[in-house]
Image (cartoon, rainbow, N blue to C red; front, top):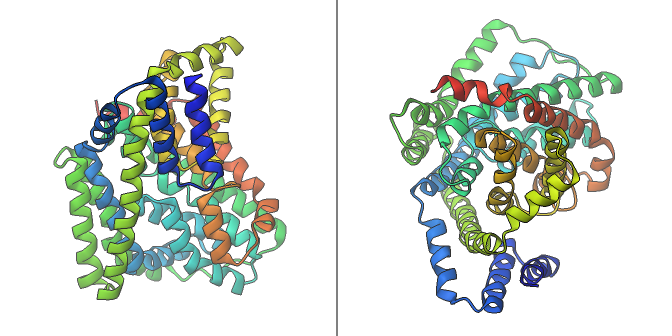
Length: 425
Protein backbone atom coordinates (compact mmCIF):
# COMPACT_ATOMS: atom_id res chain seq x y z
CA UNK A 1 0.00 0.00 0.00
CA UNK A 2 2.82 2.39 0.89
CA UNK A 3 4.54 1.81 -2.46
CA UNK A 4 1.28 2.39 -4.33
CA UNK A 5 0.77 5.65 -2.42
CA UNK A 6 4.34 6.76 -3.17
CA UNK A 7 4.03 6.30 -6.93
CA UNK A 8 0.39 7.42 -6.94
CA UNK A 9 1.27 10.80 -5.46
CA UNK A 10 4.25 11.13 -7.79
CA UNK A 11 2.25 10.52 -10.96
CA UNK A 12 -0.59 12.66 -9.64
CA UNK A 13 1.87 15.55 -9.37
CA UNK A 14 3.11 14.96 -12.91
CA UNK A 15 -0.41 14.75 -14.36
CA UNK A 16 -1.41 18.02 -12.72
CA UNK A 17 1.53 19.80 -14.36
CA UNK A 18 3.67 19.97 -11.23
CA UNK A 19 7.46 20.21 -11.83
CA UNK A 20 9.18 16.87 -11.38
CA UNK A 21 11.14 18.00 -8.32
CA UNK A 22 7.95 19.09 -6.56
CA UNK A 23 6.18 15.87 -7.56
CA UNK A 24 9.04 13.90 -6.01
CA UNK A 25 8.83 16.05 -2.87
CA UNK A 26 5.05 15.57 -2.59
CA UNK A 27 5.36 11.79 -2.95
CA UNK A 28 8.21 11.66 -0.41
CA UNK A 29 6.33 13.66 2.22
CA UNK A 30 3.26 11.49 1.69
CA UNK A 31 5.35 8.34 2.03
CA UNK A 32 7.01 9.50 5.23
CA UNK A 33 3.69 10.49 6.80
CA UNK A 34 2.08 7.18 5.81
CA UNK A 35 4.94 5.16 7.33
CA UNK A 36 5.01 7.34 10.44
CA UNK A 37 8.65 8.26 9.89
CA UNK A 38 9.99 11.53 11.34
CA UNK A 39 10.15 14.18 8.64
CA UNK A 40 13.57 15.31 9.83
CA UNK A 41 14.95 12.06 8.37
CA UNK A 42 13.63 13.19 5.01
CA UNK A 43 15.31 16.56 5.44
CA UNK A 44 18.55 14.78 6.33
CA UNK A 45 18.30 12.80 3.09
CA UNK A 46 17.64 16.00 1.15
CA UNK A 47 20.73 17.68 2.63
CA UNK A 48 22.95 14.63 2.24
CA UNK A 49 21.83 14.29 -1.39
CA UNK A 50 23.28 17.66 -2.33
CA UNK A 51 26.20 17.69 0.12
CA UNK A 52 28.47 15.93 -2.35
CA UNK A 53 31.65 17.66 -3.47
CA UNK A 54 31.47 16.24 -7.00
CA UNK A 55 28.16 18.02 -7.57
CA UNK A 56 30.01 21.35 -7.47
CA UNK A 57 31.28 20.50 -10.95
CA UNK A 58 27.77 20.71 -12.40
CA UNK A 59 27.33 24.51 -12.21
CA UNK A 60 30.81 24.97 -13.70
CA UNK A 61 30.03 22.62 -16.61
CA UNK A 62 26.69 24.32 -17.22
CA UNK A 63 28.28 27.77 -17.06
CA UNK A 64 31.07 26.77 -19.45
CA UNK A 65 28.49 25.44 -21.91
CA UNK A 66 26.48 28.66 -21.78
CA UNK A 67 29.64 30.70 -22.38
CA UNK A 68 30.39 28.50 -25.40
CA UNK A 69 26.96 29.24 -26.79
CA UNK A 70 27.02 32.98 -26.09
CA UNK A 71 30.66 33.63 -27.00
CA UNK A 72 30.83 32.46 -30.62
CA UNK A 73 32.50 29.08 -30.16
CA UNK A 74 29.50 27.16 -31.52
CA UNK A 75 29.63 29.05 -34.83
CA UNK A 76 33.32 28.31 -35.31
CA UNK A 77 32.81 24.62 -34.61
CA UNK A 78 30.02 24.55 -37.20
CA UNK A 79 32.34 26.16 -39.76
CA UNK A 80 35.04 23.57 -39.01
CA UNK A 81 32.55 20.71 -39.45
CA UNK A 82 31.22 22.26 -42.65
CA UNK A 83 34.67 22.51 -44.20
CA UNK A 84 35.54 18.95 -43.10
CA UNK A 85 32.45 16.98 -44.23
CA UNK A 86 30.18 19.44 -46.04
CA UNK A 87 31.36 18.28 -49.46
CA UNK A 88 29.38 15.02 -49.17
CA UNK A 89 25.86 14.55 -50.58
CA UNK A 90 23.47 16.03 -48.07
CA UNK A 91 26.57 17.50 -46.51
CA UNK A 92 24.79 19.94 -44.21
CA UNK A 93 23.03 17.04 -42.51
CA UNK A 94 26.37 15.38 -41.80
CA UNK A 95 27.77 18.77 -40.79
CA UNK A 96 24.95 18.95 -38.26
CA UNK A 97 25.92 15.59 -36.76
CA UNK A 98 29.63 16.45 -36.72
CA UNK A 99 28.93 19.82 -35.11
CA UNK A 100 26.89 18.13 -32.39
CA UNK A 101 29.77 15.76 -31.73
CA UNK A 102 32.16 18.70 -31.33
CA UNK A 103 29.90 21.15 -29.50
CA UNK A 104 28.08 18.52 -27.46
CA UNK A 105 31.39 17.25 -26.21
CA UNK A 106 32.05 20.73 -24.83
CA UNK A 107 28.64 21.84 -23.56
CA UNK A 108 27.60 18.45 -22.18
CA UNK A 109 23.95 19.39 -22.71
CA UNK A 110 21.63 18.03 -25.38
CA UNK A 111 19.18 20.92 -25.02
CA UNK A 112 21.97 23.52 -25.34
CA UNK A 113 23.23 21.65 -28.41
CA UNK A 114 19.78 21.70 -30.03
CA UNK A 115 19.24 25.37 -29.26
CA UNK A 116 22.67 26.67 -30.26
CA UNK A 117 23.34 24.58 -33.35
CA UNK A 118 19.72 24.59 -34.44
CA UNK A 119 19.59 28.36 -34.56
CA UNK A 120 22.78 28.39 -36.66
CA UNK A 121 22.27 25.44 -38.99
CA UNK A 122 18.52 25.11 -39.55
CA UNK A 123 18.09 28.42 -41.42
CA UNK A 124 21.09 27.60 -43.62
CA UNK A 125 19.79 24.10 -44.37
CA UNK A 126 16.35 25.40 -45.37
CA UNK A 127 17.96 28.08 -47.51
CA UNK A 128 19.97 25.39 -49.35
CA UNK A 129 16.83 23.41 -50.17
CA UNK A 130 16.68 20.95 -47.27
CA UNK A 131 13.22 20.07 -45.96
CA UNK A 132 12.46 21.65 -42.57
CA UNK A 133 11.55 18.29 -41.00
CA UNK A 134 14.92 16.82 -42.05
CA UNK A 135 16.77 19.77 -40.51
CA UNK A 136 14.87 19.35 -37.24
CA UNK A 137 15.29 15.56 -37.15
CA UNK A 138 19.05 15.65 -37.65
CA UNK A 139 19.56 18.46 -35.14
CA UNK A 140 17.39 16.92 -32.44
CA UNK A 141 18.74 13.37 -32.57
CA UNK A 142 22.40 14.31 -32.95
CA UNK A 143 22.11 16.45 -29.80
CA UNK A 144 22.12 13.22 -27.76
CA UNK A 145 25.90 13.27 -28.23
CA UNK A 146 25.96 16.00 -25.58
CA UNK A 147 24.96 13.60 -22.81
CA UNK A 148 27.27 10.75 -23.88
CA UNK A 149 30.51 12.36 -25.07
CA UNK A 150 32.42 13.94 -22.14
CA UNK A 151 32.24 16.19 -20.29
CA UNK A 152 28.64 15.48 -19.29
CA UNK A 153 27.15 16.72 -16.05
CA UNK A 154 24.59 13.92 -16.24
CA UNK A 155 27.42 11.42 -15.81
CA UNK A 156 28.31 13.16 -12.57
CA UNK A 157 24.73 12.64 -11.39
CA UNK A 158 25.03 8.96 -12.24
CA UNK A 159 28.34 8.66 -10.39
CA UNK A 160 26.72 10.14 -7.28
CA UNK A 161 23.59 7.98 -7.57
CA UNK A 162 25.69 4.84 -8.15
CA UNK A 163 27.61 5.40 -4.94
CA UNK A 164 31.00 6.66 -5.99
CA UNK A 165 31.64 5.33 -9.50
CA UNK A 166 34.76 6.90 -11.02
CA UNK A 167 33.81 10.03 -12.96
CA UNK A 168 37.03 9.92 -14.98
CA UNK A 169 36.27 6.36 -16.14
CA UNK A 170 32.70 7.35 -16.95
CA UNK A 171 33.96 10.25 -19.04
CA UNK A 172 36.37 8.18 -21.09
CA UNK A 173 33.85 5.33 -21.41
CA UNK A 174 31.44 7.66 -23.23
CA UNK A 175 33.84 8.62 -26.02
CA UNK A 176 33.59 5.53 -28.27
CA UNK A 177 29.81 5.01 -27.80
CA UNK A 178 29.22 8.71 -28.51
CA UNK A 179 31.29 8.63 -31.69
CA UNK A 180 29.64 5.34 -32.70
CA UNK A 181 26.20 6.88 -32.26
CA UNK A 182 27.17 9.91 -34.33
CA UNK A 183 28.54 7.66 -37.09
CA UNK A 184 25.22 5.78 -37.19
CA UNK A 185 23.31 9.08 -37.33
CA UNK A 186 25.64 10.40 -40.02
CA UNK A 187 25.03 7.31 -42.13
CA UNK A 188 21.25 7.70 -41.80
CA UNK A 189 21.50 11.42 -42.55
CA UNK A 190 23.46 10.59 -45.73
CA UNK A 191 21.03 7.89 -46.88
CA UNK A 192 17.97 10.09 -46.32
CA UNK A 193 19.72 13.02 -48.04
CA UNK A 194 20.53 10.90 -51.10
CA UNK A 195 16.98 9.57 -51.21
CA UNK A 196 15.56 13.09 -51.13
CA UNK A 197 18.11 14.45 -53.60
CA UNK A 198 19.76 17.05 -51.38
CA UNK A 199 22.84 18.85 -52.77
CA UNK A 200 26.49 18.69 -51.75
CA UNK A 201 28.56 21.71 -50.77
CA UNK A 202 31.78 22.71 -52.52
CA UNK A 203 34.97 21.63 -50.77
CA UNK A 204 36.72 24.88 -49.77
CA UNK A 205 40.22 23.45 -49.97
CA UNK A 206 42.72 22.18 -47.42
CA UNK A 207 43.97 25.69 -46.67
CA UNK A 208 40.53 26.85 -45.54
CA UNK A 209 40.10 23.63 -43.56
CA UNK A 210 43.42 24.18 -41.80
CA UNK A 211 42.55 27.82 -41.01
CA UNK A 212 39.12 26.90 -39.61
CA UNK A 213 40.76 24.20 -37.47
CA UNK A 214 43.22 26.70 -36.02
CA UNK A 215 40.44 29.22 -35.38
CA UNK A 216 38.26 26.60 -33.63
CA UNK A 217 41.14 25.14 -31.62
CA UNK A 218 40.88 27.53 -28.62
CA UNK A 219 37.22 26.55 -28.20
CA UNK A 220 38.00 22.85 -28.55
CA UNK A 221 40.64 23.23 -25.85
CA UNK A 222 37.83 23.74 -23.33
CA UNK A 223 36.90 20.07 -23.57
CA UNK A 224 40.58 19.08 -23.53
CA UNK A 225 41.13 21.03 -20.31
CA UNK A 226 38.05 19.60 -18.58
CA UNK A 227 38.44 15.98 -19.66
CA UNK A 228 42.24 15.97 -19.70
CA UNK A 229 42.45 17.45 -16.23
CA UNK A 230 40.25 14.69 -14.83
CA UNK A 231 41.83 11.80 -16.72
CA UNK A 232 45.38 12.88 -15.93
CA UNK A 233 44.62 13.06 -12.22
CA UNK A 234 45.97 16.61 -12.05
CA UNK A 235 42.53 18.01 -11.14
CA UNK A 236 39.35 16.72 -9.59
CA UNK A 237 36.21 16.87 -11.70
CA UNK A 238 35.12 20.01 -9.81
CA UNK A 239 38.46 21.75 -10.31
CA UNK A 240 38.50 20.85 -14.01
CA UNK A 241 35.00 22.30 -14.40
CA UNK A 242 36.14 25.55 -12.77
CA UNK A 243 39.24 25.77 -14.98
CA UNK A 244 37.09 25.00 -18.02
CA UNK A 245 34.75 27.89 -17.20
CA UNK A 246 37.70 30.25 -16.69
CA UNK A 247 39.22 29.15 -20.00
CA UNK A 248 35.88 29.69 -21.75
CA UNK A 249 35.75 33.26 -20.42
CA UNK A 250 39.31 33.96 -21.57
CA UNK A 251 38.68 32.55 -25.04
CA UNK A 252 35.35 34.28 -25.64
CA UNK A 253 36.55 37.63 -24.27
CA UNK A 254 40.17 37.93 -25.41
CA UNK A 255 40.43 35.56 -28.40
CA UNK A 256 37.05 35.63 -30.14
CA UNK A 257 35.97 38.94 -28.52
CA UNK A 258 32.26 38.13 -28.82
CA UNK A 259 31.27 37.83 -25.15
CA UNK A 260 29.65 41.16 -24.32
CA UNK A 261 28.41 42.10 -20.86
CA UNK A 262 24.82 41.39 -21.93
CA UNK A 263 25.75 37.92 -23.20
CA UNK A 264 27.76 37.21 -20.06
CA UNK A 265 24.80 38.22 -17.91
CA UNK A 266 22.51 35.96 -19.95
CA UNK A 267 24.92 33.05 -19.50
CA UNK A 268 25.05 33.59 -15.73
CA UNK A 269 21.26 33.85 -15.37
CA UNK A 270 20.62 30.72 -17.45
CA UNK A 271 23.33 28.78 -15.62
CA UNK A 272 21.95 29.72 -12.21
CA UNK A 273 18.43 28.69 -13.18
CA UNK A 274 19.54 25.38 -14.66
CA UNK A 275 21.78 24.59 -11.69
CA UNK A 276 18.98 25.37 -9.24
CA UNK A 277 16.65 22.99 -11.09
CA UNK A 278 19.25 20.21 -11.13
CA UNK A 279 20.12 20.59 -7.44
CA UNK A 280 16.47 20.64 -6.41
CA UNK A 281 15.95 17.42 -8.37
CA UNK A 282 18.99 15.85 -6.70
CA UNK A 283 17.71 16.81 -3.25
CA UNK A 284 14.16 15.52 -3.63
CA UNK A 285 15.21 12.42 -5.58
CA UNK A 286 17.60 11.49 -2.77
CA UNK A 287 14.76 11.40 -0.24
CA UNK A 288 12.52 9.60 -2.74
CA UNK A 289 15.22 6.96 -3.29
CA UNK A 290 15.37 6.39 0.48
CA UNK A 291 11.74 5.26 0.39
CA UNK A 292 12.37 3.11 -2.68
CA UNK A 293 15.06 1.30 -0.73
CA UNK A 294 12.76 1.02 2.29
CA UNK A 295 10.14 -0.65 0.12
CA UNK A 296 12.80 -2.97 -1.40
CA UNK A 297 11.96 -1.83 -4.94
CA UNK A 298 15.35 -2.93 -6.39
CA UNK A 299 14.85 -6.45 -5.01
CA UNK A 300 11.26 -6.61 -6.22
CA UNK A 301 12.24 -5.47 -9.70
CA UNK A 302 15.13 -7.91 -9.91
CA UNK A 303 12.79 -10.73 -8.93
CA UNK A 304 10.19 -9.62 -11.49
CA UNK A 305 12.68 -9.35 -14.34
CA UNK A 306 14.39 -12.66 -13.62
CA UNK A 307 10.94 -14.22 -13.30
CA UNK A 308 10.25 -13.36 -16.94
CA UNK A 309 13.48 -14.85 -18.20
CA UNK A 310 16.85 -15.98 -16.89
CA UNK A 311 18.52 -15.20 -20.22
CA UNK A 312 20.84 -12.16 -19.78
CA UNK A 313 20.22 -11.09 -23.39
CA UNK A 314 16.45 -10.93 -22.81
CA UNK A 315 16.82 -9.24 -19.43
CA UNK A 316 19.07 -6.49 -20.84
CA UNK A 317 16.66 -5.93 -23.73
CA UNK A 318 13.76 -5.58 -21.27
CA UNK A 319 15.72 -3.12 -19.13
CA UNK A 320 16.55 -1.05 -22.21
CA UNK A 321 12.90 -0.95 -23.25
CA UNK A 322 11.83 0.07 -19.74
CA UNK A 323 14.42 2.85 -19.65
CA UNK A 324 13.37 4.04 -23.11
CA UNK A 325 9.74 4.14 -22.00
CA UNK A 326 10.57 6.07 -18.83
CA UNK A 327 12.77 8.47 -20.80
CA UNK A 328 9.79 9.35 -22.98
CA UNK A 329 7.71 10.62 -20.06
CA UNK A 330 10.13 11.93 -17.40
CA UNK A 331 13.00 14.35 -16.92
CA UNK A 332 16.47 12.91 -17.52
CA UNK A 333 18.14 14.11 -14.31
CA UNK A 334 15.32 12.78 -12.15
CA UNK A 335 15.39 9.42 -13.91
CA UNK A 336 19.14 9.05 -13.40
CA UNK A 337 18.74 9.58 -9.68
CA UNK A 338 15.66 7.35 -9.35
CA UNK A 339 16.46 4.44 -11.67
CA UNK A 340 20.15 3.99 -10.90
CA UNK A 341 19.62 2.48 -7.41
CA UNK A 342 16.87 0.28 -8.88
CA UNK A 343 18.51 -1.08 -12.02
CA UNK A 344 22.20 -1.05 -11.09
CA UNK A 345 21.97 -4.09 -8.76
CA UNK A 346 20.15 -6.00 -11.52
CA UNK A 347 22.79 -5.44 -14.19
CA UNK A 348 25.67 -5.95 -11.75
CA UNK A 349 24.07 -9.30 -10.91
CA UNK A 350 24.29 -10.12 -14.62
CA UNK A 351 28.01 -9.35 -14.60
CA UNK A 352 27.83 -5.88 -16.20
CA UNK A 353 30.26 -3.21 -15.02
CA UNK A 354 28.60 -0.10 -13.51
CA UNK A 355 30.60 2.04 -15.96
CA UNK A 356 29.02 0.28 -18.93
CA UNK A 357 25.58 0.62 -17.40
CA UNK A 358 26.17 4.34 -16.93
CA UNK A 359 26.84 4.77 -20.64
CA UNK A 360 23.78 2.66 -21.53
CA UNK A 361 21.64 4.76 -19.20
CA UNK A 362 22.88 8.00 -20.81
CA UNK A 363 22.05 6.71 -24.30
CA UNK A 364 18.60 5.48 -23.30
CA UNK A 365 17.56 8.64 -21.50
CA UNK A 366 19.21 10.79 -24.16
CA UNK A 367 16.97 9.17 -26.76
CA UNK A 368 14.05 10.00 -24.49
CA UNK A 369 14.91 13.70 -24.87
CA UNK A 370 14.11 13.37 -28.59
CA UNK A 371 10.79 11.53 -28.29
CA UNK A 372 7.25 12.66 -27.56
CA UNK A 373 5.37 13.34 -25.35
CA UNK A 374 7.84 15.29 -23.19
CA UNK A 375 11.14 15.27 -25.13
CA UNK A 376 12.78 18.61 -24.37
CA UNK A 377 15.13 18.50 -27.37
CA UNK A 378 12.26 17.64 -29.72
CA UNK A 379 10.23 20.60 -28.49
CA UNK A 380 13.17 23.02 -28.72
CA UNK A 381 14.13 21.76 -32.18
CA UNK A 382 10.59 22.09 -33.53
CA UNK A 383 10.29 25.63 -32.16
CA UNK A 384 13.64 26.71 -33.63
CA UNK A 385 12.92 24.98 -36.94
CA UNK A 386 9.32 26.17 -37.21
CA UNK A 387 8.01 22.61 -37.65
CA UNK A 388 5.01 21.02 -35.95
CA UNK A 389 5.88 18.08 -33.69
CA UNK A 390 3.65 15.67 -35.61
CA UNK A 391 5.44 16.61 -38.86
CA UNK A 392 8.85 15.92 -37.35
CA UNK A 393 7.83 12.65 -35.68
CA UNK A 394 6.46 11.20 -38.93
CA UNK A 395 9.93 11.24 -40.53
CA UNK A 396 12.28 10.99 -37.55
CA UNK A 397 12.05 7.21 -37.05
CA UNK A 398 15.19 6.30 -39.13
CA UNK A 399 17.23 8.48 -36.76
CA UNK A 400 15.63 6.78 -33.75
CA UNK A 401 16.68 3.44 -35.23
CA UNK A 402 20.26 4.69 -35.65
CA UNK A 403 20.54 5.59 -31.95
CA UNK A 404 18.82 2.37 -30.92
CA UNK A 405 21.22 0.34 -33.09
CA UNK A 406 24.22 2.00 -31.42
CA UNK A 407 22.58 1.39 -28.04
CA UNK A 408 22.25 -2.33 -28.74
CA UNK A 409 25.90 -2.56 -29.76
CA UNK A 410 27.03 -0.83 -26.57
CA UNK A 411 24.71 -3.04 -24.50
CA UNK A 412 25.83 -6.40 -25.87
CA UNK A 413 29.46 -5.62 -26.77
CA UNK A 414 31.16 -4.31 -23.60
CA UNK A 415 34.35 -3.47 -25.52
CA UNK A 416 32.71 -0.33 -26.98
CA UNK A 417 32.46 1.28 -23.56
CA UNK A 418 35.02 -0.60 -21.45
CA UNK A 419 38.16 -0.72 -23.60
CA UNK A 420 39.32 2.84 -22.91
CA UNK A 421 38.56 2.74 -19.13
CA UNK A 422 40.45 -0.57 -19.01
CA UNK A 423 43.55 1.18 -20.33
CA UNK A 424 43.49 3.51 -17.30
CA UNK A 425 44.03 0.64 -14.85
